[in-house]
Image 1 (cartoon, helix red, strand yellow):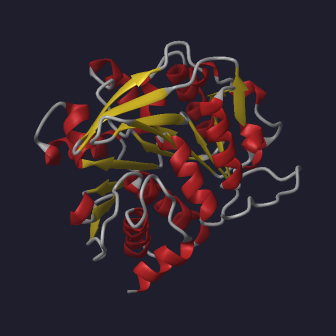
Image 2 (cartoon, rainbow, N blue to C red):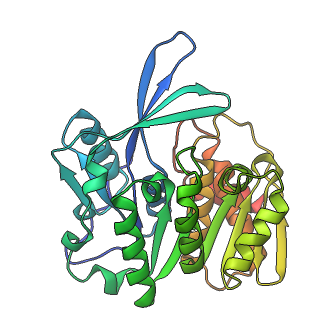
Length: 309
């Protein structure tokens, strides 16, 4: 077990992911249920933090056994715990009755995540943070969605780089369309997958849907992940493709979160790299997450080994 990173109290994170941390309730073949810590934005914070950049997850979690598990996992990941708000509200639960393919439904009326308050975050953090990440179901759950959209807008105006991964779920119907467009316009980096494009645009014409996103924000870097088929990176009129490394897949849970986390880490830590190298690192990060069960952030050594192979 990795010990949490010891950081002076005055230090503030360079990377913050704001949104949801939740508990996945996964149904096994025998009908039993198992709980696992999760949440798209929380996963990305853990990925970037594990790779070596001091990071935080900003969001609300419950004070019960589910919140305790998320708090402990956050501490072990070395995240700045000052950004996690513990509230006497119910937990957010994601039930997964089927895993092949995954099928979700969420339980969390008036849950802790909805009561997140950015005004109580540590003083001065906006002057220190370089990148802020948004996405997941947090942007489809009011009143949290409005709070996060306002925060992203404020950070963008202050010169902070914004990344966005919608991470489509069935709750993102036509009511989500305005948020999708607003966040896409704000973002410096956008990550989408095949499932995202089909679900968000309610269309099987993936190329057309990708073009819509690119036209909404021609300045954004777009990471388009395609699972075993690798990924493409779109920067202006240029496009690069990277194949996925040959690995023995254990579990694909968290691979998308690892890929965007890997890309953001590469951009922050290795600004001298060219775009194909950034893309390759992102793809290898996604592959590295597939080498262990659950949403386990890959180590820098694992990604580096795949990158160099």
